[in-house]
Length: 348
Ligand code: 5AD
Ligand code: FES
Image 1 (cartoon, protein in one colour):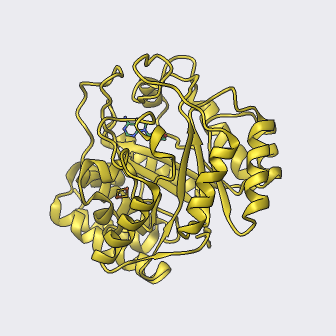
Image 2 (cartoon, helix red, strand yellow):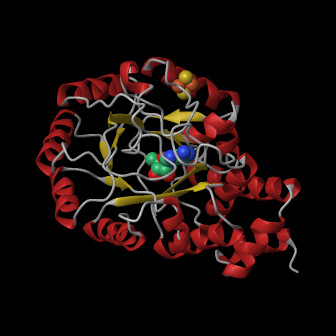
């Protein structure tokens, strides 16, 4: 059996491990190993990004969704939520506010809402670009056709986030209903890259049925696909989903994964996610200290925040955007980091 720290050092030197080695890492690390990896990862982040943290303003503009993912609180079968859509002018107001706080990236996220046709999305993207040509626009709208992805890109979208959720097909099938397909997910990711987007993938840590082999598969996928961003957070149960009684994911394993991704792929954009901030009050700070370099505070109007609950107890649902902005500033300062006012593009 190979020693865990030996494997972390090998990953750092060679930037790759094989599946058996990854599996070994995830099945036998202890707290000391996790801190060992965090220290290496933090030093890499400091040398690539300095003590600057990129921020992105997240606008959750619709919680309507045609999908029924078993883990997700806004799945179509959930009758216990009030569905909403923001208008274009409400979205622009969020951007105005965000711009004044120093956000130079806006992330437009929604469920898979058929109301927002390609024309409507392109209209919104071009209005934002017209008003704020110095800002990057990230879309996170789920699985669409190649033509739709191209249309958004031509309208000015720069980046696209579509988590792969798990790189193991049979695990994917346990998390999703039969009408969703792992192969289509992967096809979408390849198209997005081909079109020219900066692409973000990602997965939950500790989702039901996930094994050490599955996370090993995620690492191999990330290593081969070379995404520009990797969003990972712990699985957190939502009371109105079929997975309501499953255990939440582990904070420590999530932090360990962040560090290993940073070590493997030095320049990748790595958010300390809202789920990480939800599982522990200082989760995002811990994420940064484990190698994360991005935070995505919420810019959605306070009136809709509680309605965009992917999991129970999500943070910031009662706060104004200005509060979140100040909160992040202070949190980062408390650990010796500063928020950057910039688009924060991938620089590979
Ligand atoms: N716990 C943690 N993360 C979740 N997501 C959806 N539901 C949950 C949950 N219950 C994540 C998914 C999705 C992203 C927008 O949020 O990975 O891609
Ligand atoms: Fe929203 Fe702290 S980031 S209140």
